[in-house]
Length: 171
Image (cartoon, rainbow, N blue to C red; front, side):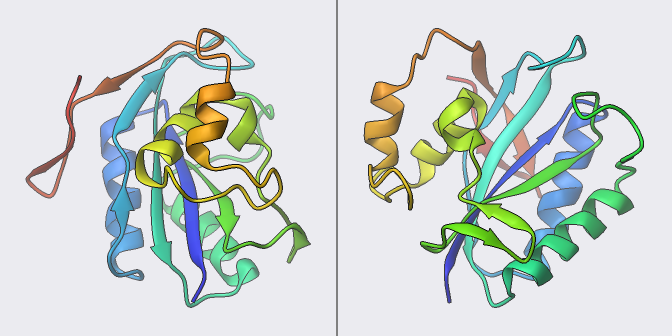
């Protein structure tokens, strides 16, 4: 089964929707790896700050099946798709990588270009998979994070509790 990494973000009822997404994913996937949770300013629009994290697991679904499941989780959590591309989100879940797949698969561009563009994606991915390699850049996430302009986006770790346990502690 391929190793999959997802990014999860929310800026509306953030703690509630992030927890709900983890609950939903946990019903389908074993041994999830959960990154620290980071808060960041909205990128591309004026809005409330986001909470962001990355989750990894081995996946038994195809890319298309996984993408449909993630859309369903977003929908259950009140995600609206009729607004602007960059705007407030109850929940945004994106497939970052699916094994070593590269290209458009089942309508999903892999790997997701946000990995190398946004600190709120790259840093939590680096946290949980530092020695894994980006399937297209052929560099580890450690190398990519070191090369990234870390002053370009503000983000900071936050305390986050899920199911009675701290999965993230403000550093």
